[in-house]
Image 1 (cartoon, each protein chain N blue to C red):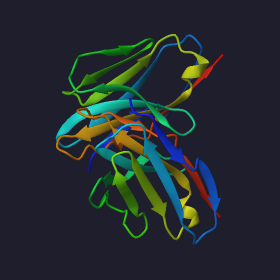
Image 2 (cartoon, one colour):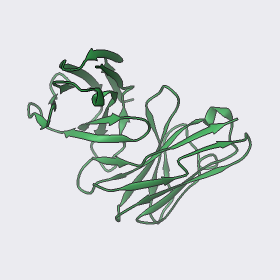
Image 3 (cartoon, each protein chain N blue to C red):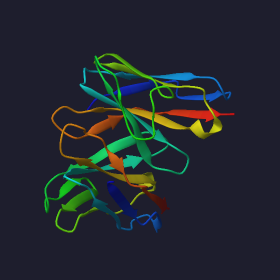
Length: 114
Length: 112
């Protein structure tokens, strides 16, 4: 299984600012994903990070708010822009194991917006 | 829209008890169902099920899928305090999307 690291592990930010979260996988993977878990809720997919092309966003999520980069097969970033307290969540990246539906998750970033 | 419903939402048991967690789904073009254990932040993978009636087993945990009745169960025998966590069920559709649709989870608390 892939080993995934994320940083920062947590942050406290002021409203109106932006935060970029980094996700690193220990092997090359074709598909990486970004999920959000709001307090007391389950995981919701924000977007699929595609290497070499624009990310594919789920309904309710837009590129201006959550720009994503995927410069190579082991790394991706998610930026949370112009933050408000409603963006306080855990943000998780995952990678899909080749030839299966199994996704492995990073340790998550706990974001608090004041 | 795909729907994944887990029950119960929370459960408190004593060490040594056996628990059964439920997951039902309504998914267009269903392909697979996955179980994860979430302690603190990161979900850790437990099982992936694609075929009906074939039990997957790992130690004290086991799971089975019923594609006719559209549900899966996760069993944990001889529970330990370390089993305390949120257990998440997720599904995928056929095709090249690979998106996971999660249920709300079951919070399991195992008391000594």
